[in-house]
Image (cartoon, rainbow, N blue to C red):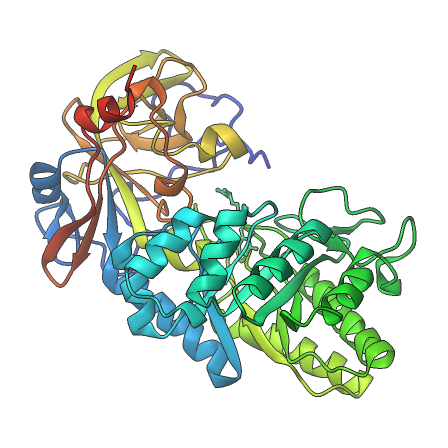
Length: 472
Ligand code: LLP
């Protein structure tokens, strides 16, 4: 996904080196609303504020690095998804994107359900008061303990991922005297990428049960998924409520979802024909993309809801099936745009004719996505405005490896100096939740801001936290 180098107005060279960047923005102080949370603005003084609070004050009070989450924006996105899908559908926020007790309460208050994929996420959800019937449990290798806790709590659905798990969940539910609602996760033979999808004959990945039989077309529905349906329907302790499909993540193109919906409805039709049962639910998973840089152009929730609703309705009508209740599981699309990471600049290293390395006080321990997925981010100077010319920069962390890059290519003002604050937007999803203690880094706090109030919802780790686990 290399973008073309642009020769306009660089500080270091007449011709810029190869990189993932476009021209410097006309105004380095501007904040593109596509990548920044809703209440972020530049104040007349020149610094950036969120929820009415100046980032310099936030840095002083909470320290850096810190994830700063715009609660107003988070709640607005929840409502936008809920309203777009309406009362005939359910929105399950995917907790893996970012989960904390405060987030669970926001979801509850805004009428969303919650998808958890581990015992830890389930514990957080239950502890913060999410009603168990609004929780779905995922995972390709759930432990017996996780299954037992979920069944005991009475979760609304367990999404079955393998033949072994059918037996395990059935056994646990029977032992506890329950009839557990379950969905079966199928792989529909669609490999989704950002701007394309590739239909695959073989489902070469760890998740789910394939629709396709060995080597045959996914449309046939004669594969392990159909066999799983047969087995689940025979078990009294399981109530099969629907079929689940998740095709990938950070997807912009709806075509993959359409193929997925069509194939899932195909399976529902077969189940009706073979077993005389019409399953009442379809879950099409998460995966909707967000803007990390202004070049990304994500769909709005109402467009997504319409596209998915239309295809499911059309396919069901064609097959003579009652339209099932639809659910979706957006994680990134809700949490991602709501937060930015606030860093302080420590050192600058200028490589004449190439770029300037700007080292901040965090790095790959708080955002592994650049190193892991070659993800692109944008970045802005937020503690002041600057009229200086653009400087091609690479924002790097403080970890002991050269792959410790936060923003690979970005233009920052040439008068950038130690002590300045930078913010990287769109870090609300898969940054804190994938953070590590590499180099014994202390994971940053998550600070929620709303209407002029800021509060820590996940506190900064301390050296005592680190040493507490070290019991040798
Ligand atoms: N439902 C299921 C079953 C999933 O596996 C996932 C994500 C989601 C929903 C939510 O997907 P979303 O709407 O957030 O794209 N760490 C990677 C993303 C991994 C996603 C895994 N599953 C990243 O940082 O891009």
